[in-house]
Each structure stands twice: as C-alpha cells, then as structure tokens.
Image (cartoon, rainbow, N blue to C red; front, side):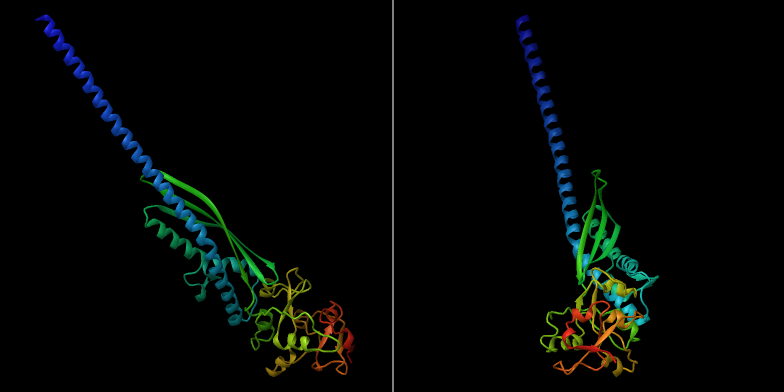
Length: 323
C-alpha cells in the first residue's frame, strides 16, 4: 500500500510540475507575442512617420517654387499699383512668401499659397493619420544667383509625435528652388515712366550687334527691349528697390526713346542704357554716324564710353561725336 501511495504522490508531483511548466510556457509565449506585437506596432508607426517626413521634404521644394513665383508676381503688382520701390526687396520677399502679406496688408495673389499656409495644410493632413505634427519655418533666404534666376532657400523643423505609443521624431529639413525672372516686368521702367511703359525682361540671344556697318542686330535689341547680362548693371532684386548700383549678376536693356515720346514723356540726351538713362549718372557719350550705318539708327541714339557700352554694343566703327 505504501508503494502505491508513493507512486501516486510522484505522479501528482510530476503532473503539477508539467502543468506549471505548461502554464509558464503559455504565459511566456503570450508575453513574447504581446511584446512582438507592440514592437511591430511601434516599427510600423516609425515607418509611417518616416514616410510622412519624406513626403513633407519632397513637397517643400515644390511649395517654395509656387510661393516664390507668386511672391514675385505680388511684388510686381505692388509696384504697379503703389508706384514706389520696396525699401528692402529681400526683406519684403521674405515677409510676403512667409505670410502672404506686406506691411500688414494681405496680397490677393498670395491667397492660400504662403509658406505658413502650406505648413498649416501639412499639419492637418498628417494629423488625419493619427500623428501629431508641427512644422516650423526656421529660415528663409533669397539671392540673385545668376543674372536670370533667383534662388530661394528655406529650412524647416518638423516634429512628429504619436502620444499613444510614446514615439516622436524631430528633423530639420532644407529645401530650395530657382525661379527665372524672364517674363517679369522691369520695375525701373514702371517707376521712371510713371506707369506709362512696362518692359518685360527678355533675354537677348543676339551676339553680333553691328557687323561691317550692318546694324540689324542692334536695332532688334533696341526695338524689342531685350536684356543682356552685365556686371556694371543692377540685378533684378536691386531694381525692385530702385538700387541701380553695379552687380555681378546685373542685367541691362536699351531704352527706346521713341516709346517715351509716344506716351508724352520728355526725352533726355543721355546714353540709352537703362540704368544710366533713368538716373543722374554722368557719362561721356558718342552717337552714330548713319552714313556708315545700315539700317539707320534713331537720331537720339547714343551710348557711353564711360562704361564701355560703345564696345559692348559694337558701334565704334560707325560712331561720331555727339553734337
């Protein structure tokens, strides 16, 4: 009897041990499963946050271009309507592209397209996925990087947070875009002709202005209001603030005085290079001897030797002293 009782005791002991081991195994499995499930959820959330961040970075450059282009249009419209230059073109540009306003006045062209408008849209779109998002504009810079283009650089700080999973991500992103100035109005024509004449910036492809007395190229340059790059001339950004000092990224055109006369403006006897004609800069000028030119140039046409425009526009062989 005692042996049978011992066998039963051993059986129950082994059963208890096996049962305990099975319970521990089940608990361990459930814990590992739950842990793996949480880790998978966190990993999925981090992937989602990375995707949102990549989407924001890709969209940034596109937004800079759209907002930047509309900012230039707004600045052009402001000069047309107010008849005055900006005190600081870069400062005005930053204010307009960021806020869609200038001097606390909303600019219609910027409606829903400023950088702050964009950050609000991004935050709402990301929030719809269950992720808290904050986008902050840290810095905006603008430069005339070539005679024909303006570069805009923007840096932003992005904060993404999932409060339920205690997952967050902070990242600083930089974007940039380049905008051509071709097709925009030259503000110095608008201001100095009292809004009577506008001249769109058109890049000249003429390289030969005068050839053995043939002035076809020069007349085309003059009549079409084309522009060439020149480091003696002001850049487009400088023109927006009425600063006609030299720039390494400057541009210049030839003023067609006939157009000024046609709108009732009194002509000046000055070099017809725009930044000289519209200012008080004194230069030594030469005129054209039409007996050596074909076709003839207007009798008011003159260029300065002071800044080598006689050589730039190749009139040396057909020039004469201005009487």
